[in-house]
Length: 81
Image 1 (tube, rainbow, N blue to C red):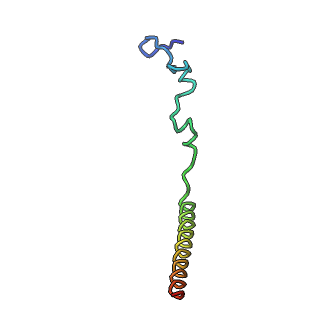
Image 2 (cartoon, one colour):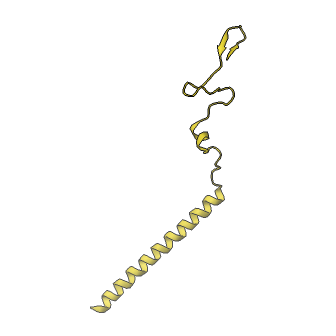
Image 3 (cartoon, rainbow, N blue to C red):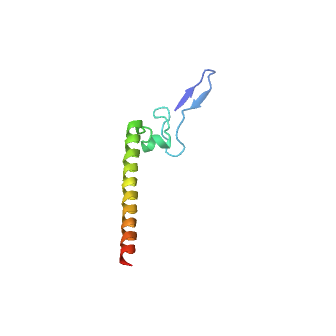
């Protein structure tokens, strides 16, 4: 399909070299648009804060449990001698 520009030259309609799709009918998409990533909203600050607090709490419990277990082992080791 040929179009004319302002000067009167006939120009071919832009089309995809791979599939021949008319690019005026459907403009080309970026990779993010094709994968649907541009529609995903980033997590809100409240969600990010809540997630950070949760992971920090879990890390503290694991650390506390480790120290208590290590202390128990040391005390039992000293009592058995």
